[in-house]
Length: 468
Ligand SMILES: Cc1cc2nc3c(=O)[nH]c(=O)nc-3n(C[C@H](O)[C@H](O)[C@H](O)COP(=O)(O)OP(=O)(O)OC[C@H]3O[C@@H](n4cnc5c(N)ncnc54)[C@H](O)[C@@H]3O)c2cc1C
Image (cartoon, rainbow, N blue to C red; front, side, top):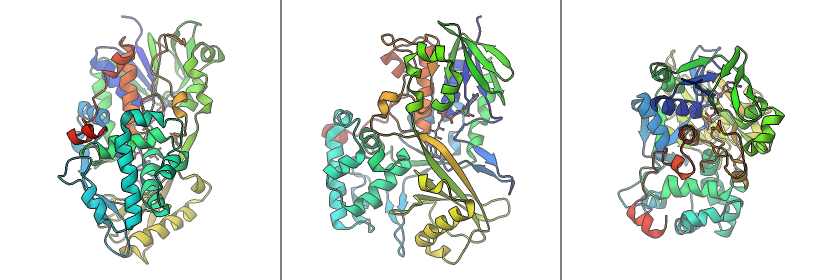
């Protein structure tokens, strides 16, 4: 038995790699600097209230086949609650509902879309025109848009101002954490093609019914009972490189020798672990500092009275994109969580100013809440929430394994939501990267690594026939 495989980072990418490798009979040591698992998709204990709160609401979709597979392996699938309807605020009336019907995809949203009142006839015509174009572009057409902005696609398909601000922006900002004008067209197109149009299961929304951190409770036992180890509260300081191979990971508690290393940390953290010699030996590490980030703001609010009737609500055309009704807190107060993605203009605001600005949107969207103020709140700023999926980002997203032609370090494998998966920065992207890295460690190469992924939800026959 040689040294173990060392995984740096206990977010979803690192966990996914650790789970698959231990199942394959490999000995792993997972090093995580925090004392809990889940990375950005986790929870914390709020010192003010003592409540366990998520960093931010995390939404998954039916299309997240690999994330669901990981939850299945950990035995936590039952903790996910599914919502077929997406509610769109349309005050002072009731929210509009977007629910897949029994019509075959890609026509499954046609009925609810036609009934939506927050878009006018011209807006709907424009959206339908763009949807049809997205269907007909298919995967190959999407590839051709790589490197251009999705805003350009919206211009080409002659979107109205309202269709843009009330429909396209809320969806793309929520899914890609960037406005349309700054998002790579192929990433945004993937969201619509694979997430909404191709079948009627993919757009179904999943929400954890428990704090996110509880989803990872079984992971430690899963790994340790199969001979692996988890070292929580231990920070990797650098990767030890002998000029040819990575020998191990230097941590704040000493050196951990490794037969192979998977790094499952964000690109800026990875850059800090690599010496100049290592960076110049592996082409995948050369452009880490070119990857930019985009912020997200999550605002936890507690009220004395119930204010939301639907489990969640999109706020079209507003600064706050989404509200989620949470379970009551320990004191019986009614909790609501507000999410602002691509939150650049909010980062310098103090908590009181943030809450005032969010409450402006809450009062707009929820007539019942007018006149009410939260009795408790907590704003969580994540300045480096996700990588910025700008046009051309693909060139900066490395593969798990060194490139045979361009060179690299043979026993160094990369994972993380920012690696090359084709997905925006999501939990699904992170799990995919972890699965790909574990397959690469097990000796699979090229396309055979892709075999380690759970297949996508199949496109419905009509969607396939039309080109999706
Ligand atoms: C506010 C917010 C909202 C989001 N909303 C959604 C959503 O609704 N749906 C969705 O799918 N995705 C969402 N995401 C994105 C999702 O959280 C991430 O894509 C995913 O969790 C990334 O996982 P990861 O394992 O790649 O990285 P991370 O979660 O960042 O994990 C990296 C881990 O490495 C550890 N680490 C870093 N440096 C070291 C070191 N030197 N030594 C040891 N350990 C180290 C970190 O502590 C961390 O635990 C959101 C993200 C944020 C921030």
